[in-house]
Length: 185
Image 1 (spheres, rainbow, N blue to C red):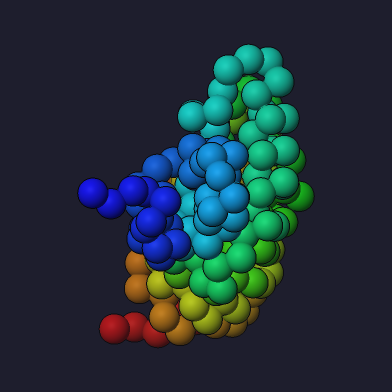
Image 2 (cartoon, rainbow, N blue to C red):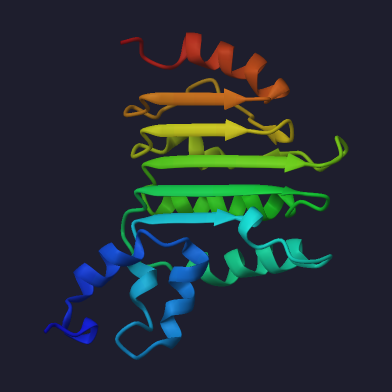
């Protein structure tokens, strides 16, 4: 019989990819072997639907990402999901920082959902490094608070899938960017 402690780190990381990121991070207390495994996950999912449990849950959500995302060691992030839907959204500078970290780790798929339960939530501009991310293949954006300041040249040569939903400001700007800067296939 094979014990879980006999499994390779590569196999354990593969198993952890099936868990929500918050649960995968919590496995670090199991043993020394598990302590840093989550840091090598190729897919990260930060969703405050899984964290909301009280009035300070937005702060816990922000603090959880601020503490753990910079510790991530995988040279490539295959997929990053950031989703926040709450009365008090994370500050726009947090979103900018998180996307910037993902871009520096050669993110391939990026999905951001940024919704405020009230329409007066803060706008979340995305960092300019997103528009020159050569590794990005999929970009999905949802939320009326997402703001893109699309530069004249949008250099993301491998971008295959661009999806927006309820991004009122975004749709107008992206239609211009897509027609003038993205290659047609």
